[in-house]
Image (cartoon, protein in one colour):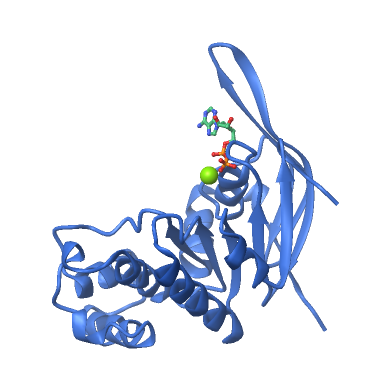
Length: 225
Ligand SMILES: Nc1ncnc2c1ncn2[C@@H]1O[C@H](COP(=O)(O)OP(=O)(O)O)[C@@H](O)[C@H]1O
Ligand SMILES: [Mg+2]
């Protein structure tokens, strides 16, 4: 039986600027089951990244309700939110967000520095395990600028996986890659989904979206049926 992982009801978001409040998300109702692979598509400015940030607990909704893993997010403290974020969510961004001064291995180790449950002595073995999974074990001592874009994105994916998150949130993961590298990253994300991780992907890449189990269209802050 399927289990709902993410449940949004009547969720709205507005930003206030000098010109007043701007509604960016309007009455979003959406359930995503554990284990799904979902593409979120829509024009630039339609609210995709804002929605992903709320789902990923980086931002709050202005109104409405969000339940993640049976936990009502709206009522949690900052501390509880940070625990839920660290335990459940891995992020992948268009520009990889690697630290250029650190080796590949040290980049992948980074999230463990913020997790007191992991012993320092175990960092390297855990990071190497994830680097093997993305096929980059031989690049552990390289620096990000010595790698291709596709390899850098694979390092970012390895880093996102160290906490063994329930879900991977990907904001335009192939946006900076050529078609060959895009296809390899798509293959990897789908493989991770096959292994059980729930995957949400904001994308303009039709080839990627078509390969997802489900496509959600967002137009002007609303999900279209
Ligand atoms: N922090 C913010 N303050 C004000 N407006 C914002 C902010 N973040 C996003 N917006 C606006 O919200 C709309 C949706 O943005 P975004 O979610 O980034 O769209 P997308 O990812 O679909 O391109 C845009 O009009 C953008 O300018
Ligand atoms: Mg965006």
